[in-house]
Length: 391
Ligand SMILES: Nc1nc2c(c(=O)[nH]1)N[C@H]1C(S)=C(S)[C@@H](COP(=O)(O)OP(=O)(O)OC[C@H]3O[C@@H](n4cnc5c(N)ncnc54)[C@H](O)[C@@H]3O)O[C@H]1N2
Ligand code: MOO
Image 1 (cartoon, protein in one colour):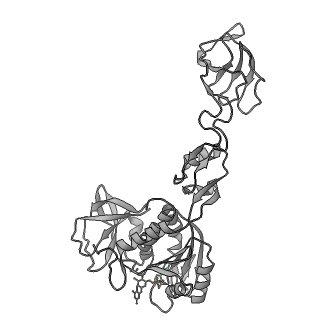
Image 2 (cartoon, helix red, strand yellow):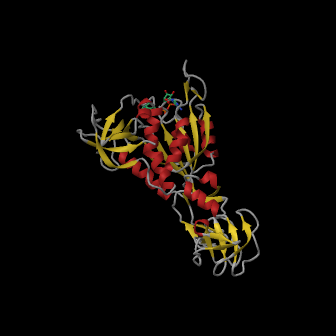
Image 3 (cartoon, rainbow, N blue to C red):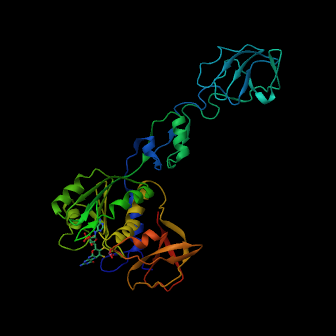
């Protein structure tokens, strides 16, 4: 494998580009955002979360039966249902209220006697009630103000449910905002490709990829190949990360580098010694990071896995989901490139990685069939290869 940082022709090695993107993400400052809980789903908590109420919030029956006070037998004095007013102001010793699971128990309740243990005779109830049993006492699980979720936790389904149970309408999350700019006069957003026009294949893949890495695409803008318009677009994007698709190469209509220079951005990665995806770019201006993805869609995906996914996952305080710690034996016809790291689309079968073919830079056919890319460094002579997971 190429040494850290080394590549050729000014390009970084693939490994060092990916590591650098991760470090840039770790150093970036991302504001914690208070988002409506449903929008926070899948994000990482940016601060600890406290209970706004106790859990349970009131003394409630944990079983269907009788709320009782004192030793039995008990005389039923009412019926308590969940969501209804409490059955009576208070129970005196020897009294009971027939009660449903989840209903508030009256003051003075010492236990709930489940129906299964209760016997009724002569209008009275008897049974082995144990003091304190089958009542969910207020605050016994969580006291008001207690810290229940800690910074760094992922807002999964159970976290959303718990947060709602504790009264939260919003949650504080680290969810980097990503603005996408798709360039190219020839790129269209509907209908069929043909006669010099191509349907955008990069815009549609980015929201899922970005969400997988811990960010959120907040807008996708399509524009032609105009330098001034690109400068205006990248300076006007209100985002933590601006992704520019296309315009990354050296052609007369490729304005990304000039636009980055014009806004005074510091270029951190200018080309990566990998195939596909070599013209990718990572730059920074103030708190905003810029990622340039090549226009060829297959190359854009590899570049996104090289720079964007490590960057965003670090910015959102989570591990890089594409990193696969265990290498796999690559089975099939794969040869190394003399200078560049090749990323070869593979399907995983048991422990083996099988190349799927069709992974040309200009389309996503191979990637759509694949589970991962096998990382084939220059000088690789077969055997095992590192894997980069696909979402
Ligand atoms: N003289 C050189 N020419 C090129 C080089 C090079 O090193 N020297 N590198 C080639 C490689 S590799 C790539 S990748 C491309 C990168 O080009 P750009 O990032 O500037 O992108 P464009 O030129 O705008 O487009 C390239 C290609 O991709 C199609 N495209 C663009 N955007 C989309 C999209 N959103 N969805 C689908 N297809 C898209 C576009 O029509 C072009 O066919 O540069 C090579 N040239
Ligand atoms: O980025 Mo290009 O081949 O490497 O499509």
